[in-house]
Length: 200
Image (cartoon, rainbow, N blue to C red; front, side, top):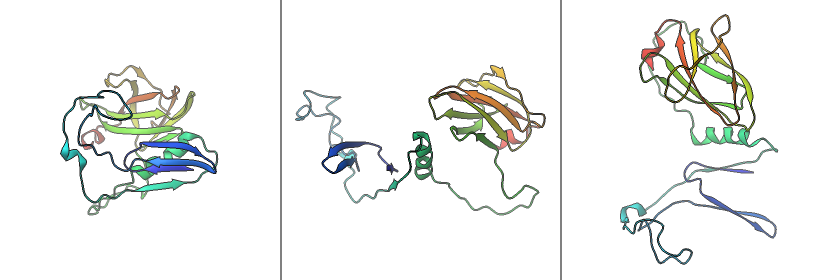
């Protein structure tokens, strides 16, 4: 059983006679950044500064979820949790017509143990940045699928400097990649034509 929290992730578990108890922190509210007279600690843990506005007194609401599951890998449970914590945001817009299909994805990854974490324009404005990470503690051989044809794809670091050009499929719509255990990967994409870069 997994417990999902939309707010504070702080929790504590303990063994009881008939199972396990779970305590969830609903609200962190302090009148001082640090107090030197706590019964559980000697001395201060930080500056002794009063913070009365940090108490946020008043009515509060919380959103939690229980997720019963089989003995799934932790990353699978984490993926479901991400959907709970960051639901899709829908914004209505006026239709403009066009020839795009009803469904599509600009970037998708396989297998599911690879997670997409960011898509943005590069700082120099010349490429698109795609960032992903490996959810598991072993090497994953995966594939990236693009919704538009790519001219070039480079592997980079967070500094967005091209380091290694990756091989694209003949149609420019896919690229194989190897991702190390728990590794974060940054890719720089150059689409065929530059129409997508100004949009992002």
